[in-house]
Amino acid sequence: MAATPIPFCDETACRTAGCVPTLCTGAGVRSNAELYERSARAIPGGVNSSIRAFKAVGGSPYIVARAEGAHVVDVEGNRYVDLVQSYGAVILGHAHPAVTAALRAAASDGTSYGAPTPREMKLAEAISSRVASCEQVRLMNSGTEATSTAIRLARGATGRKRIVTFSGNFHGATDALLAAGGSGVATLGLPGTAGVPDEAVANTIVAPYNVVPTLDDRVAAVIVEPVAANMGVVAPSPGFLAGLRRECDRVGALLIFDEVITGFRLGPGGAQEKYDVRPDLTCFGKVIGGGLPIGAVGGRREVMATLSPIGKVFHAGTLAGNPLATAAGLAALNELTDDVYMELAARARRLASMLRDACAAADIPTQFPVVGTLVGMFFGDAARGGLPVNFDDAKKTDESLYARFFHAMLAEGVALAPGAYEALFVGVGHDDAVLDDLVERVHRAASRAGK
Image (cartoon, rainbow, N blue to C red; front, side, top):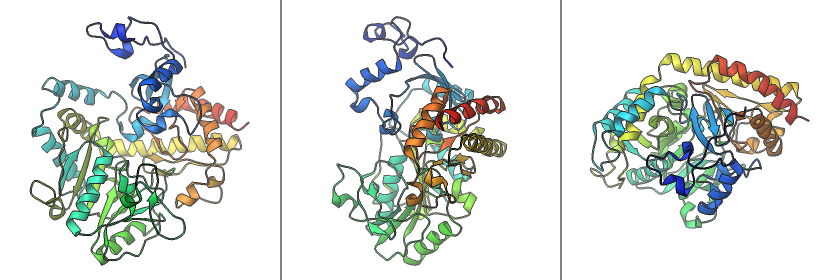
């Protein structure tokens, strides 16, 4: 696993003209631990997204220097088979030639204008042509911005305040959607984090996943992950999504699909195509930027017309439709053919089977559900007695057992997400040679974790 350590620059070396920080040879080698400690002095917790701090699994994080295809390499030169893939964003694999070429070409034209560009139009057209419900598309900077905009848009279009979401679904760091769900029956939300006042979630109703709630005419929208990929991957029960569509129609509420993970990951039309349910609004992120920061809201033309500058619901952003992100996104979407999706689904099934067999041989109770190209994971009690169907079931996962498995896999050069409720992602880079190489690593890791 170990390779040549990668020199890491210090402040003095960074002054060298043309210095590339993670490749600079003007300073000594740093370790993951040293760099994490240094980061913690400049960044709260040493990370810019909380899960990266390894608090859920213990230890300190590896610091990525570079990546290619199915692999990431840390600053010590350790090379890992990457099953995180930027949480699904780089479906083509890291540094895919089509994406990097598009970025080089776009960067030579400038990196930000604060003005319209042809590429943003083309990306919006590309999304609309693939996702039937998206008659119009507004681009923005992240999945979180997409969900917060969709909520504002739904409230503005309906003139109502209440939002229904589902326990265990995650829709980004938006105050109104950071509500902690009750169990059993739908409850008014309570803040799920400090810093969110009660008032921010006073109109958020949290319901159990896979149960169609009864709505009333105070509800502006129902927002749902059509496949719950933030609690270990829980598929929608038969009739659940269609039931939400009927209930929203009954009371005049809008149905919002959060396809930040499933969009262009399950197929060109996302989960809504797979399950044949058409939402009013769809939120995108991750994949549509080829790994760069981007988000989008798409939907019915009459609803989208409520957005400024033609409607009364405000949305703006200097970097929305950024020329680099749109260039990368167009390049990525153009590579995603039907054959690619068929191959990715086959690889997801093979990965799940490999993990299942290794854990069974080590007497570790696990479930690795597969939904299209998504692979989920449950450990301990959550894996006994059938697959989880809601967050109460998923929360039975044995987090300490997962932490042992995580570190055993990391020692074998396999990087999983440092949290027990995430999905596993395979991409174009995970070819047969990569998967063949994984078999023995996975078995050794499971044997170590099961002791």
